[in-house]
Length: 184
Image (cartoon, rainbow, N blue to C red; front, side, top):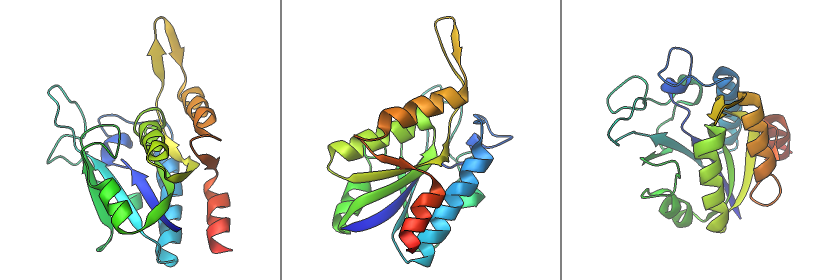
């Protein structure tokens, strides 16, 4: 079974100064960068997923802007796959599944942004498609959400989604634990 790193939407608009800054994006980007460094060292496949917003009214990840670009912490190198998506699910109307299947990849290590949206949606889809997933919880970031008259802090949003994904949909682990296993 072949393993690959999938980095979801680690793009400039989610970082300080971006149009949709997430809490903890710098730390999460650095952790994703450590995973990327490890996969490169081991010469394992890497797939970068980049969201480009095409829907009317979109306010971030707009085409041809600095914000849509993949962040410097996980900048793709020549030969690494970049999958463009337009929906939260990285498999919807993209080349991701074909790329994974064509390369015999069945195990995914995932990191990215936002925990409650694109990361969650992609992992659930990957599980439904039969992939085995490991999620680096500290290589993900999200934001505070509101529902009715309640505000849910970003940390609680993140923890809730990690708890919901852990076990059935993915093994949710720290970047360091994942790296130790890969390097053993």
